[in-house]
Image (cartoon, rainbow, N blue to C red; front, top):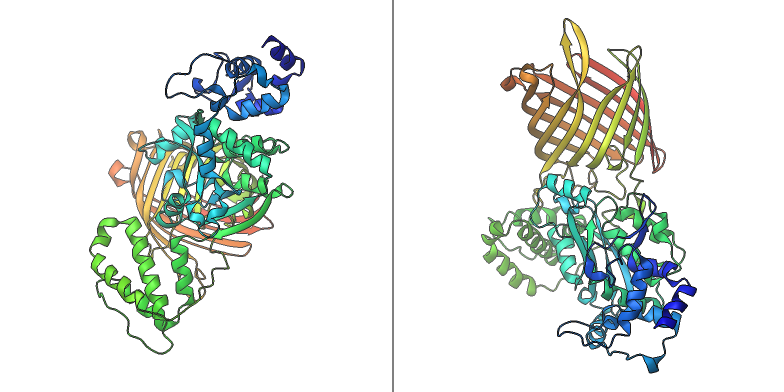
Length: 608
């Protein structure tokens, strides 16, 4: 053993990149090395989390141990097969001096997975649930036996385990690493059912080019990761980050993680995979259940559409009659899909129409007319088409209080005027969107800080019946009058609005009329200029937006009633136009007005 340890030190194995990757060692801001793994059972040395050399020495001792292993536990050779394989290759273990253990449990596990190839899976954004707002990536193990039935493949997931949660606790704990994260393996159809059907998220699959030895290395290290837990941070150490690291162990020549910034998002990692020469072999689009319904509706004639929308009321409970040029199977399949979609959202409501659904299934089994649905054009855009997520902007404007200059910075993610390619249209998810403004002859002011801003504008229709909501919490500037003088002051702000949006989603030219939203909610602000240092009350908003090509228009009016808190009522109106030169460069013009104040500004936005 002493000879092996001496040789390992002489070869500096504890300093090699592959060893650091196996242990997830990263240099801290203080210049020390520390493993990202946060549970002790992954390490064989008490100091293994902080000392790669001591962990390597402890690993060597454990491989050669002749002590009996307690029932239910595995020999270290079997618990750490990639460590064992790599050290054996580097140090040329003498088999005559080593009792090599047969790892039956690992071999059975590996044989059951038996991937022919790997695919990165991206599930699109879902704004109706906190955990799904950022998109998600996982790995699919493509088994050749399941070539024509890929839903039977297995998926590899890294995720947090938050349990019951609300939006605000999820955001706080997700930012602060308050949730444990680990790897899990599951049948792929379970995730397809969750993402495609229950949450109506389109899926993009990217098949990777791995050599046989790389797939073996991937499986060996994946087995080791079963012993590892990590603190989950959705800004950086998240699902996409840890999947990229496990792929770098499998393919040592890759250095993808060095291309990541201090923020890591699922869409950005997809861009990095796509940029690696020869890594991605092919791309596949898997539409959600809701998208499949839209495909079928797009194929229908006016008569077929009328019958479909009559049938999905379900109260009528009728079966269509055969007619010339009427595709009964197309309409019936769309109705059955709609029932499944509604059942995934509200199981109790769907129980009322279960008998009708059963009759439709029997009716559909007797139909033999054929139809073809074109699903070649995606109803969403792939994540690699998305704009960069950080943003800095400079503005110049005129107002009723004088001219001003402004600078804005946003950490992440996306606002309503950004290009929607690669994102959920008409959505907003922003953190620490900060604005500093300088009026002539006045001191610079911290105009606003949106700590979190969430907006989900989903058109209401007879199929989805989704609601629209907006949440804004942080610091905002309030305008008020004092001794006939108009003043501006920063105040704490909380704004929540809820309602419905409308569009021609199923027309001949979908979404061509834009989206109209009607919202009601509450707004509360605190500041010494208010009566009792606070104002609160109900608000009502009417919003409209439309995007076409590089252009987008957003306009709206909001009435705010503060009588309950004995403050003056006020209003706010806005009209904004955006022109995008590219994914990185935008020009915007805004006209904003409220009680006692009006302004017009032009701004340049750079995304990076």
